[in-house]
Length: 317
Length: 317
Image (cartoon, rainbow over all chains, first blue to last red; front, side):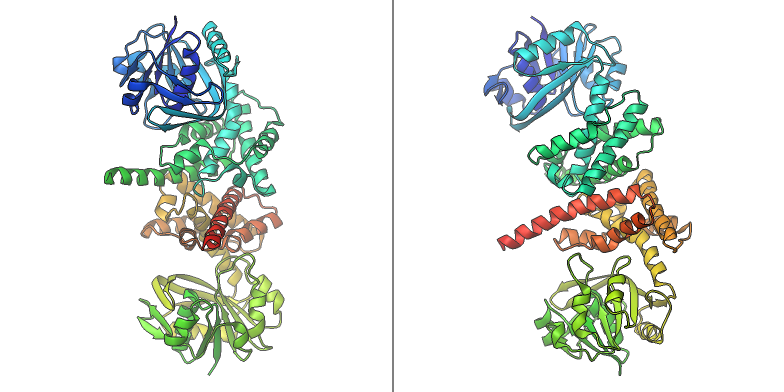
């Protein structure tokens, strides 16, 4: 029975880990903040896809150092934040043959992990899901819930296919791709626009962002800049994708991006992973991105204020 | 003795009106919200320039209709807001020979008043002052306090010179200009950048906006776009002005723009007067302004959210 360790078992890790555990994988978890609750009674998962159930990991650890290097796979599902060295996090649990699976947000977030473990198979997953932690060990899956999976930097592997089959068997749609970087660029069109725009003005939902024709034109312009960067990086995006995304977003009930929710709840935001890496790639290829530059720089101003306020709160607490 | 009526006697109107009253003008005031307090005991003004004093207008009115058309001058000092028709406000008090004086924020804000009263002399004043209303009839002047004054659309008049002399005699520096539109463009460099940027993320001060070299470069870029629009409109701006303004702002203690204060206090914001008119002028002259477009559109998203929240509060109240 293949074994998998979830490193950073928050909402994403618990959701996808539970889906694999149901299909004959031995899934253990490293949980820092929710260790006591999960150790005692597992994860309480409410999900329209997986059903409401309790997921009890094979073993639960408080820290990666206690878990050892014996796993066939390690699933890294933390947020990608500045100042968090993911290679350091992984080091205690990666053996010579461990397959690393990233289910994380952002663009170009595989590079530093690949550089640190160049001989380990690296699978990269792009999740489309609204799932959050409702309390210690309590996971609330609101909607969507699918995955696009491939080998980084490209191609597919037997393990990728094996995982996809298990996800599908657990009712989680999993699309395999030979070009996961392309999939990340496609997701960046939405991600790198709606997320940072949503934190301006203290949490704007999709309807507020797309309210007027001028605003929709402007969001399309920002997306077009991303598509131009993607093109320069060798990942062309279909010309009608921008309009499709805007139409699709208008067709859904108004909602707040993950970054808006992080902002409102005083949590760190994945600004560098989600837009910073797109901006750096644009500068590398010398693609002009005046709209994205503006969005990124204002997001950084907001993040800095947000961080000072968080620091003040934790000083006071 | 020349007579003047302040229309919209808030902090700006009371401050500049009081300076004129001290130099032999008969100054009356229309005060809507603070009528009772001002009628009873005048304005209580705390000011490092004028000294702490009580300014009792010659007459106090609750509405313009009660004031009549007998004034030599009418000083309009309201905020310039969408949906507020300033020509309508002025109509009851403008006689054939009334000189209209605007001391208001924004660019191209004279046009609609000039169009409504084409035969009346129109003076336009650009104020550099931090002054606010601390309570009913209580005016708190924090810092600065100077005026640039000229005839709109250009030139000078004996009345402009007369007012400037009275201001100066009251310790309020007043610069006369033949080209008030140029003065408004110069002020727009700061105004149309720092104001709307400051409302993002719930109130950013000048230090937060200028924190990193990348942010300073970006603010300079936004200012440069404004300078290009000014140039297209026939009002060239000195090439070193952008750097001078950024240096000067960095040299002052961190502070929040008037728009940030309006935002934080749930008050309407002068977005159209301050940046919207710059954006429209750019579009008229077909000057590309990708940075300003972004700032403007995000400011509009924020304003819309801000307005819905204000409406909700007043529904509840």
